[in-house]
Length: 562
Image 1 (cartoon, rainbow, N blue to C red):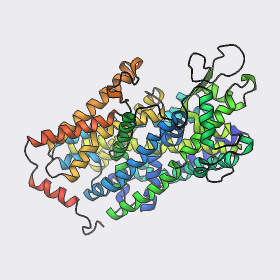
Image 2: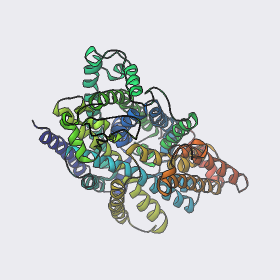
Image 3: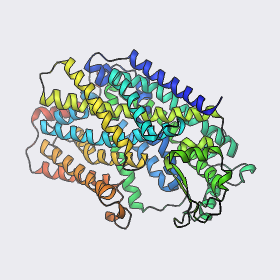
Image 4: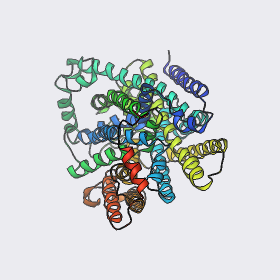
């Protein structure tokens, strides 16, 4: 079957499944809308959490950024996986024990302050909008290539789909939709990885193929040695060498780890299960499901980079395969014949380099570059959309909940009925989708980079307030609020300055201590901790009932919780 027809069929079937699940699981109460009634089984929640976690950044962009950055790209692997472990072990069970709907709920009650709740609401909305911009961009990239529509139109189509099942089913609909999306995305990620591993190394397991010798048809020798050689021939840094400073690598990894542990759309997942024990089980399941993709990503990155260089370097432009011109039409690959010889010069030197490849296409184009069957290419398209839409839905729900529950119900309009609150939640999703679509059309960077900014903002705002709220009875509202404001203002200002105000100087020579905007969230987090602890020291202690609540949350095995 022709690729275009097969792609439309595959994507259409998956979309029909998502919409069907949304109709079946439509929410009729605020509890179902916000936390799926608190009755999601641990296995289903583990699958949904994994899908929520493995966003467009993981599926589409992560292997691409590792493919281009080589060893330096490992910060994303270490940061995101390490952060999830920290979240699952350190934070999630305690917040589930607290038993409220949202992270601002915890901040507001723990710090006995409506102002603290408002600051948390602002942080949740700001972080979520930054994160969702990357997801909508990912949707647009997939649509533009595989459905051959303009990238902006692709974003709009994605907005419509995610709005439908998010507004209809809320967290209940999103959860069970994400179970289906995980199955689609992991199958779509692993099938081409297995195929390419067999073709290039003869090894059926991609994780082992990554460290294996290439077949004779692919030049022989170990894969990474071959890739290092190709890079050096073209003037690039060796694939296994590092370019970034060790300090920047440390701070990016820290921002991603702490940001993960503070992301509201992941934390809220653990409110959907019936008990603390179920929260721990679902965290374990999710870690297993996440590991399947994250251990495969380095192999896909290396395979894709090798195939790309072998295909395009010094090749006749007129003889390039069909996938090249198709991606050219999307604007995500561009060729400029600077020396008019009809050959593609793909080199590190920007003065003579003739090829520009958007790193977000690496995973999506990989099956085509490797000349895999059409059904595999169509499957990857469906998987990319599943990854982007699953996370976008979770983020939009966080924004909706922050506005309808934390801002209106708990603050500005406490007397509204449950039906009215549900209506406001759905209206909030509509406006959130529109804003997210705008940033998807006009993103501040490539997908993984935008997501990294979101993690930095989460690390600098939520993480210290949550950790201190759980493990310190002395931390008070003045300290927590001051820390959150200081952390997010510093981090956001640094990112905005280098990415929007003065992007011309966005390089290591001008960064503070050589720390990139992707890693500045760690500094913001440390500033948050320092300000919070200092202010706390010179202000009144929390009330006795708040101290008792903190101690109660930290006691495991309470009746009905374990």
